[in-house]
Length: 290
Image (cartoon, rainbow, N blue to C red; front, side, top):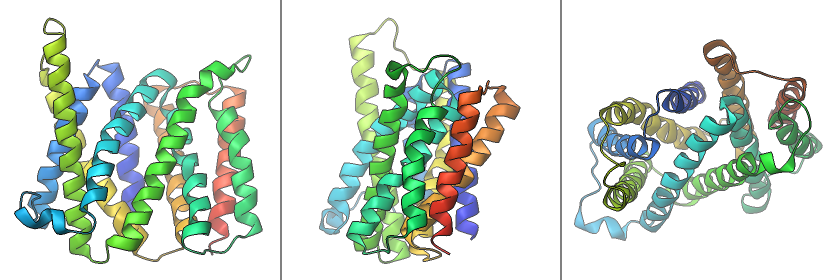
């Protein structure tokens, strides 16, 4: 249970941080890249593992760590951009309602039971995302592309993490080693992107001290948000098709409260309906696991 609470709180902090990035004009790519190096160092310091040894490519999870690390640098930048453009509540809901993707894959990959509560929740999730990501007034399809992309990419990320945990990370040592290696790959990919932008636009793209500070502050909670998510999935508290929704509903509720209290984000009638539907959707899926 402690893993569940920690993952909820850490993810809420990350979404608040992304909102502050936009408010203070932090260079997102630089901050995220620094954050990933801090993630690697945090894992190294806390678990005594570093990814720089000759036999690492013999590990069964190594190729997936490379793939997921590269994917993470893309996904983190996507979520940061969506948070700045569409708001924290909208991005959080799109991100967390993506649970329908790993839930569906859980039925297929792990033979988990298909129950009517889960199916009802998945069906309700579609209008929930649509309503929650709409603005006051007329709903325009063109405004949905960014939250929809967050929805799909986040769902695929959760599915892949669960798949790797289920089939390849059978010990706590493997879980920490995989997490640290993945973050090292993400940091390396981000560094290449930052260097490329600086070479291409020397006048406008320069290292920023506030981006360095932002990345350092983000790195420690970000490392543990992924590490404890893997530990949560391994704890067998509930089936994966239930624990992911339980986790996501907590994050949706906490980030929505943070958005209203800290940033005074406006919530129109359509978004209120979307939030209510999302809570009902995730609750139905979660209840099916008890």
